[in-house]
Each structure stands twice: as structure tokens, then as C-alpha cells.
Length: 112
Length: 115
Image 1 (cartoon, rainbow over the protein chains, first blue to last red):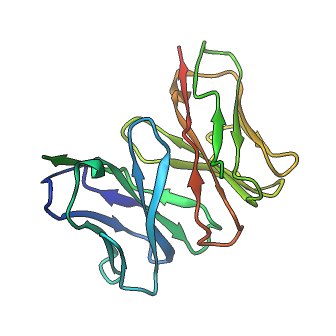
Image 2: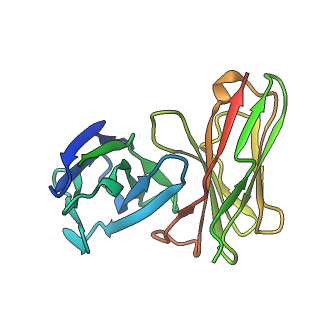
């Protein structure tokens, strides 16, 4: 089956690192994505990782993939108040075209 | 360049009415996707098109929901005889290519409220 799970809420202080976690159950995932949703705005693609990779770094963002445990994480270094948003992980299954299955989202609150 | 646009941004309708939601993808993008997002949840796939051909409509909840993309560009999602449970944010996305891994860019969504 396809089930993507995320914790609901994360609170950090400005300047700290944030780590948002995601677990998925379908081992046939090929691409895994992180999207950011700000109030009143669409979903913004932040980064993605292909399933044959363990890690991907893009400026302040680091994505870690543990295929054995079906665990995906997004680390945001030097978190800023502008990073406050809801973060969604999403998987693209091998046999599902380009359709995405999303988690429920993690609300990140950054305190000054 | 222009991103994905959706109209209307907000739609309030009475139960039993039909509604049509429009999506204008990024110019030249081959694929177009519709998702529905309930409050406090992640988006849920409804259907998608490559060019004008509907590829997968397995996510449409029932036969009151239909979608078309007749010229391979703009798409319309139609909900007939709306019900209160249809209230949600309807999101459209497009991707440059049809293959797996082609990044999907989302529009701002249409918030539908059925009273």
C-alpha cells in the first residue's frame, strides 16, 4: 500500500537546525519530494531525491534517505522565521506514472 | 515566466449545484495534474493528463467528478450536484515532461465551499 506519514508539528528557535521526518511504506518509490506550503500560496517544490541516493544537499537543505527503514528527512540549517510553513513529503511510486502521494504535512514554527 | 494559474480562487456554491474549476498550466508543459486537499491534510491525487489524453482517473471519488483537457493546455475539473463533503482546496499542477520524476509545479488552488 501507499502511506506516507509525518509528525504534525515542529517548533525550533531561529538559527537552530530543523529536522522534519517522513516515513513511507511502499518500497517501490522512485522519487521522493519535499514541498513547502505557505498560507495562501501554492505548494513550492523545495528539493527531491532519487531512490538510489542516500543524501542530497542544496544550500541550507539536506535530504537523507534510508531505504531500509523507509525513512526520509529534511534538514534545514540556520532556520529562519521565513521558513515557518507546512512541509509535505511526497513519493512517486514506480508503477504510478508521475502521480504523487503526499504525507499529511508537518507545521514548522520558527521562534525568533 | 508565468506559473500555473487557477480560477476562481474561491468558490462558494449551494449543495446540488454544478461547479467548474479551471487550470491554466505553464506554457508548453505536457502533463497536468489535479489534486484535492482537505483542511489539515496533504493533497490527494484525483487525475492527470498527458497532452489531451487522460491517463489516470483512479483518484476521482465518484462519477460526479470529471475532468477534461481538450486542446492539451487548459483543463477544467467539473463537479456535478455538489455535496458538502466536496468542500476542499482543489490544486492543479503541471510538469514539463510526462516521465516519472519530472517536477510538478503547483498553482495557488481553488478553495471550494459547498453550503
